[in-house]
Image 1 (cartoon, rainbow, N blue to C red):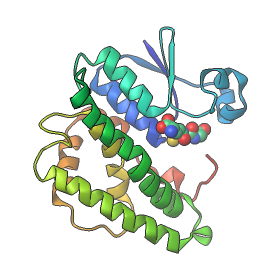
Image 2 (image 1 turned 120 degrees about the vertical axis):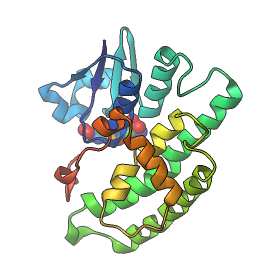
Image 3 (image 1 turned 180 degrees about the vertical axis):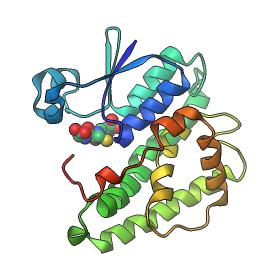
Image 4 (image 1 turned 135 degrees about the vertical axis):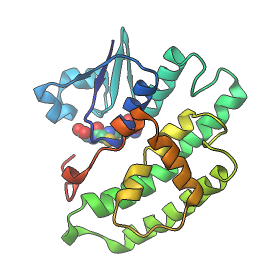
Length: 215
Ligand SMILES: N[C@@H](CCC(=O)N[C@@H](CS)C(=O)NCC(=O)O)C(=O)O
């Protein structure tokens, strides 16, 4: 039984819960009253020195950092699904995972979702939001080109690359923002929506986060 620390509205937790669902693993959500002040809780910091979620405990292994958790779960429980033992295949997946974390996520989650949705209207920096949106257009254009040729980012089957980039889709398509036409990305999004763990863990209304900068 896995133990998972995190809140359902956290984007980084959602990726991990989606994979746990796809792998059909049993998981128990762990919470403690002090988790509200995780960063200051010594017991939590002993598991993750950064005081952030998600954190997963699997028997004696404690893993933090969402992409490290995805790789750990796929390696231990995937039986070759979603990641690969072949270094060449794995490097391609890793490349898109790292791109998601260092390009798409900062611009979409940081620049647009935080800058626009989580920031109270009176404090929004519109110039920064528009710049981030323009960068997101370029990122989604890259995904569009990949997906014109294949149903999932790296071919016929789902890989960890889809988990990391795909977790943005629900928020990207739900927000009241300008978007370019992205027919291949939309088809991919529809394919992901057919997966119960994606619907259960990623497609979660996020209205409670509007104008909230507190975590
Ligand atoms: N790079 C880290 C980022 C972790 C992170 O920033 N987590 C956020 C939630 S998405 C967090 O812990 N925020 C404080 C909180 O929820 O208490 C990862 O991918 O796991």
